[in-house]
Structure formats: C-alpha cells, structure tokens
Length: 326
Image (cartoon, rainbow, N blue to C red; front, side, top):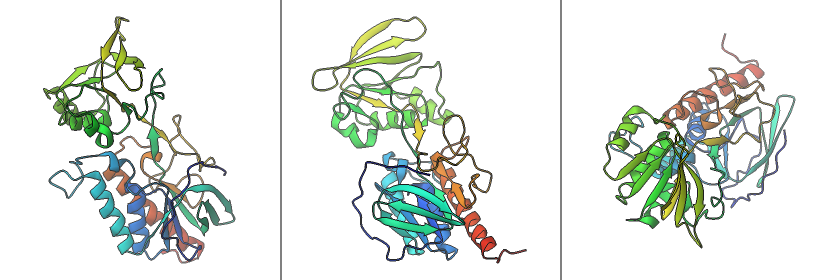
C-alpha cells in the first residue's frame, strides 16, 4: 500500500509510544466512535486526523436527527463532544497526515508526517471529499463565490441571491440553512425529484425562501473577479439561459478517500466493501463511515459502524494472542 499526500500537518499532542493496538485513520463520527469503544476495551488506541475532528459533521449547522438530542445540535459542538469522550476513555488523537500503510505479518505500519506507528489492527475512516461539477468557472471562482460548505461561507452572502446544486440530503439541508440568510435561494437538480429523505425534501419544497427547479443543470459559472452569473440548462428542453447569482453552493455527492487502502476490495464507485463486522478483505483492517460501501450514509450509522469495528478489532487481537472466548 502506498500513497504520498501533499497536505502537511500542524502536529500536536504527539504520542510518546509508537506501538498501538488499534490505529484509526480519520476522526469523523465513525472514527471517534471507534476510538471510544477501542479505548473502553483497553486497547491502546490512536486516531490520526489531518484537519480537525468531526469530518462532514463540521459542515452541519443544525443536526436534528442524531439520537439523544431533541433539539438540533451544531455539528462542530457534537464533534468536540465525541472527541472529548474518546479522550476521556484514553484514546490519543494525533494531528498529522497518514502517508502510507504497509503490512508485514500481523503488523500494520502507518507512516505519518509525525512519525511511524504500528498496530495489529487499522480502521479506515477517511471519509470522502466533495464531488466537483467539472464545468467552466468552478475552479476559477472557488473561494470567490463557489463553495462546498454553506455553514462556512453562507453568512458572506446574507440577503444575496444564491444557487444551490444537488438533490440529496446535503443539498436540501444546506439550502434550508441558506434560506435563513436570504429569501433568494434557488435549488437546481438534474432529475425530476429529490433523492433526499422525504421529510427533508418536503421542508425544502414548502420553504418560501427556496425556489426549486428540477431537470436543471449549471453549464458555466461566469464573472469577472467573483461569481456574477450562471449559465443554466433545462435538461428536458435543452434551453439554456443566463441568470445573475452572487454565490454557487455545490452538493452533488462525494468521492471516497480510499487512496491509503489500495488492497481492499471496493464497489464500482470506490467505497470499501466489508462484511457486517466491518471487516475488509485485508485481515485486521476495517472500514467505517462514508468510506464504506453502505446504503445509508448518516452520522448515526457511521458511529454504529465505528463501535462494531472496534469490537471486531478487539476480538481479532484476542484471536492473535490465543485468548479468543470460545
């Protein structure tokens, strides 16, 4: 297995011991839940995260369907609680970038920008990154009106006209957030209906601040130094028309970050295949969260997968040490 990443780590709280029982790559909901359950099982647990704990949850302003929170909870706040909970049980968090994973015998070596760490088990929890539209103007205006995070950049466009692209949970959820900032939100989707959860889709369709256009796709993003206009196309009639917008928010799916795990079996999109124990085809390696091939990607699902993976890892270590419970 081999991968070289360009992004460098800030590096803090570097663990003193390099030998671990369980190494988790990625600190989203799945990774942090795995860290908690791994540490509670008395495994020497290390989580490696290159950016910030929380993963996709960091982009959610009001998470309303996470069990135990009858009122919407901010994604950042929930992420902080998940991290602290894992730490309370003894898990260590390393802020660094994993660059390569190799396996010799029953031991994995995880190379990072902060040094090398070894363990008999690894949980892949690297998640996914935003899928791009791939149209003219998208890259040119990224950070200048084109965004992939409404909670991050939406406030910059308060009372402005904003275009949202997508038809899944993320697009609908982020549109709802933007509708609190402006009454001029236009949501376009390439198909004739949303693929988001029905309750969420219904709220979008009944939101007076959101105009929904189905069978519509962006063709080009235009402007001088920032987003000014978007060329849109009706996919049924073929009609193209230009419309003024101040910002474009893109939520059209994600790309699994599987580069560190080339030896694992994957589906046609690139998500890692596992069994119900979260085991991959590589003994001692598990996958959870958005990286895993699953029919339903939600924070609560990822957290559950993390718990299962850590439990499976603990049993695997017992098997290696001849201490399996018969």
